[in-house]
Length: 223
Image (cartoon, rainbow, N blue to C red; front, side, top):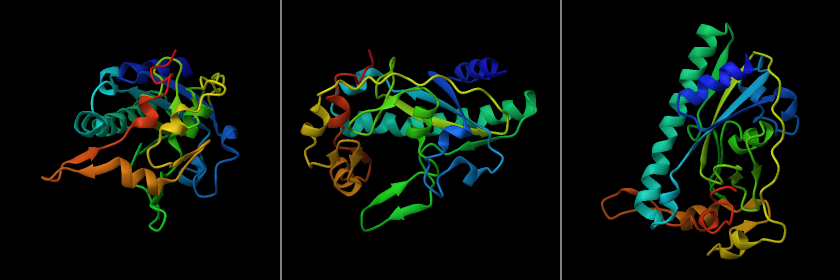
């Protein structure tokens, strides 16, 4: 069943897919555990959709920003369709989770938001990748180009194996290159990052002004 579901998700347009049993989320913070959303969750199904490599070769403000935002409804659509497939064809229950927003948690002083669950930690638990020093997900094939989606299910499916870390020992290129020193090893000061990275044009179009920690990573395209 697991491999059949994986194939269906890839057929819907996902580039990678992994599975994590609920036991792998024992360290999830209170309020952000999959069972806080869906108490009968037994398996977290995780997938990723990759941006084109070419968007790393141009100024990020308009092109990267536009297509990065465009991945969000794409990923949410795959999650919703997967939930329907699991309900209709596998007689299970499946809850799609928004990959970006909406979410409840917001610390206005720190400008710190948290998704309903951590997508990147779910991806780590499902064997899709590991986290770099810049806190971004790193996948062997797609580097840090993945937008991650999640479906919570009551089907009990076996976890995939953990991924091996791609982060280069001794490499601190992402940390040193941050123009506002928002990065510590494995952490990010969201207020500094948000104020520097996001803006609008004179007409009001949203922009991404900085993707430095993503684009300088030697493993940004994977191995």
